[in-house]
Length: 352
Image 1: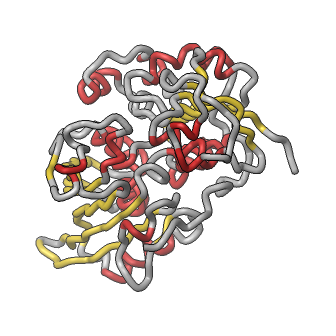
Image 2 (image 1 turned 120 degrees about the vertical axis):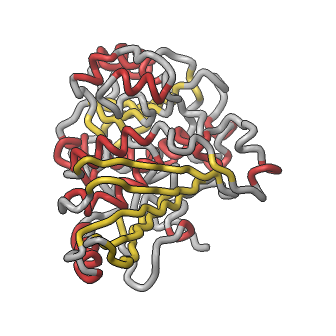
């Protein structure tokens, strides 16, 4: 066995924290040493996460970020947006590597952050300097390997970016793209709200933040970095009666010369060596195939041709808490520490 790294989780009482802990407690090269929280201080982790009963002796600690990071090789943050950024100066001073699951460091423009997150950024210079590497391994793997600070992508953003990344990299993503994506209730976090209350959620479909979701600028920035041109993204999220999972349908147009066979080959080849993105051969993506796992599925349906452009619908599915959250954070952590990026993430989830 090689070196055993030390890790701390800050914000360990939420759903994202639960997934971070679940993966870390059986990691062969990383020891989960501390779990910090403002809630349940002194209580065992299983008091909040019953699936961890008997799996760890750790308790929730009410300690500062600096104390949590002391002696750690890596710190993983499961804190809410706007809270995470306030802790970052102390964490950066600690010398530990940081993986942040919040949206606080995914953008580059403080004005855009304020527009979509409703507050001034506490440390805007870190945005403009690009201090944080965007943690989408399928696009930024080499940069993640040498990063000290990683901003892990949002759940909708991951699902949509994986759907459109092959087109962007091939220079085929230009102009308007329309997306409708449905999501499970766990994406709203552990604190109950009107939108996640079971009697309403269990038998309902409703939209929220249509054309104004905070992941829009993140997606545009990422896809333009990958090669998209003059991208105009119109995104409508839908709240669905699921506990976990995202299913996105993205509508784009490509030149007529991009035949259906070329499109299918493009996607199959682009993801052929990616450990966590599957392009099903006999079916289209579905949530139940990826739920409970770090896998994503991507598929497409080419359409008709009008005015020299071919319509194409791209479908993508992820588990919002794993590939769309904590699992992807662990994947980036593995890369940052020079480890096999698939460690603790290869289980396929359950069926059905």
